[in-house]
Image (tube, rainbow, N blue to C red; front, side):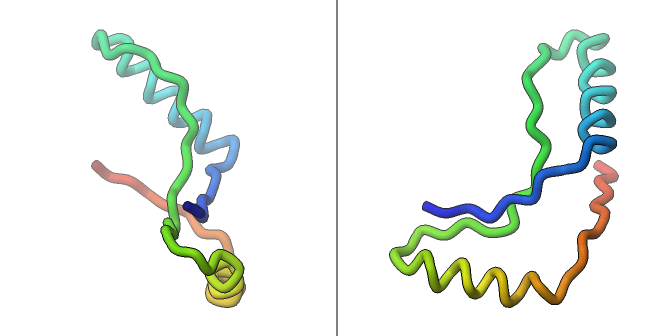
Length: 70
């Protein structure tokens, strides 16, 4: 299996940790957070073709912000 994952930046990671602390104040247990967004998951046998396709498609895009409201 091959996954294409976008790792969040340090400021976003800090925000996740701040939210986690709020959760802890309500009794929600703390977990180690690894903030990311999975862009694609591939379960095939042509990994090199998949990687080439992703590079071709994603090269047209710049990094962008993702805002979660709920």
